[in-house]
Amino acid sequence: MKVVIFDVKGKIAHFRRPDTTATHLTYPFITPTAAKGMVGSILGITDFTTKDKVGIQLLNPVRTSAQQLSMLGKDNGNTFNRPTTIELLVNPSYRIYYAGDEYTDELTSRLKLEQSVYISYLGVAYALTKPELRDVCDLAEINRPETITVSTVIPTSIIEKIELEDNHYYQRAGGFMLIYKGKRTFEKSVSFLYERDGKPITIKLKKDIPNDIMLAKVKDDNICLV
Figure 1 (cartoon, helix red, strand yellow):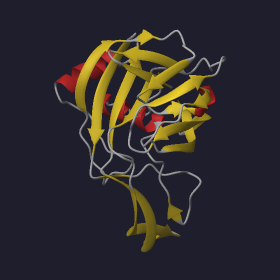
Figure 2 (cartoon, rainbow, N blue to C red):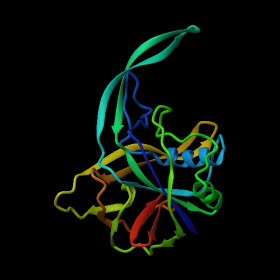
Figure 3 (cartoon, rainbow, N blue to C red):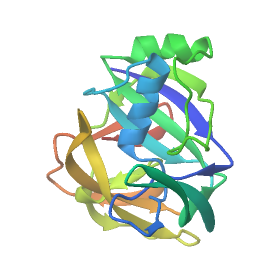
């Protein structure tokens, strides 16, 4: 299996949690479905569904800022300005590991030429970004050792125990949609463990790991793909 590694960054980002209304809260980092959707926008596929997997590595610390924006609302066909509080991610930067057999070759070609059919953005249209290709290499699946150090965010469902380290700030984020089925429908959800500053995390693995989660080695890094 091949993995395409590319970076995305920006001044701000917002990946809205669907369970928020008056105040638009954000997930703390790009969601798996948003990362795959970005690949679809690069390729020009408007309703992008795939069995390919993604891993997400934090390159900058997770920082947020609440801002009040004037959003355009509608009522019975009439438009009006609606003050809305939005939680924004500040200076987000991510390394995306996109692995599989369906679209990796076409994605590699697009990224090498710095081409994209649609504009890429970090969750909202006013948070523009430009994907930058870092590498393309073969993926080596790991035989699931008892303890492993992982560079990407980690699904909590595979963790038996966290090997705590000094100067690490461990956080959990839940409610991420896992599989996009097309036509705005989703299936399954996943929670992640991450380190606030993007540092690798050492964990003890559970004996039984879901089949839709893959542990793999890319050069010197261990990554988790969903």
